Length: 101
Image (cartoon, rainbow, N blue to C red; front, side):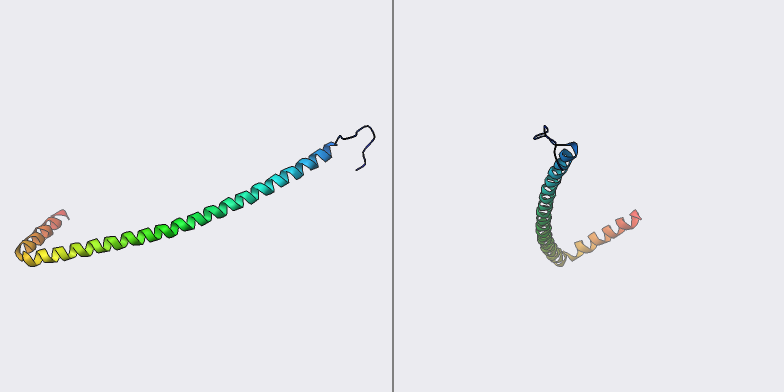
């Protein structure tokens, strides 16, 4: 676009608009790139936490399983040592559950 004499260094409205459009596009491009980088970081962090959570959950499940197995053995030993008490307790529990219906 040709400029008239006397307008040295001054931009037309369309030139200013184009300049601003380019500046905004550049800024948006940087922001979009940064947003993509942040999303990738968050995605990786989320995956790490899911894996860690899964591992923790598996560990907790294993601990719960061990606890229940230990309790089961203790109950079996109690029943072997006190069979009549065990039968009595089971009978009373059965009666109470029957009454609750």
